[in-house]
Image (cartoon, rainbow, N blue to C red; front, side):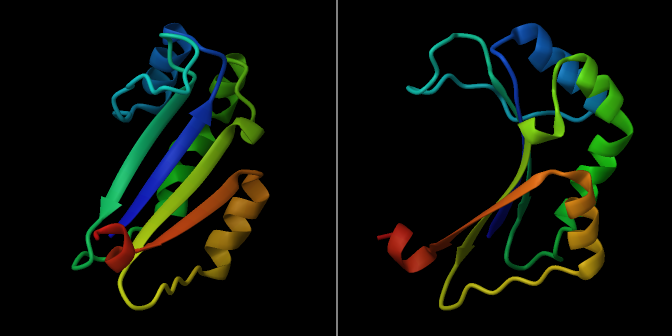
Length: 128
């Protein structure tokens, strides 16, 4: 299974959280306060796509950039810079962790200035 996350970090605020949702016009993951949150207000906005093993690969970099790029100016009015945005791929695998990224995707994410984080977990270890 692969989980693709688009994270946007900001100063704690329900107003900012709701405005990001309105600007990007996608349904975010439900905010749930964690033990690390110092405020009852969200400071991260997350949108998630999940790809099961039998499904076609999701072109998450282009999907996320298609959502973000036309809205960078509006996000900037909320104080959100590209450095506040992160794409995060979580890959649960069995036997071998292998990924492929096309040059066009890497060029586009590089030009966007957005970071990419990848975490891999061996299903045999995490499910025991």
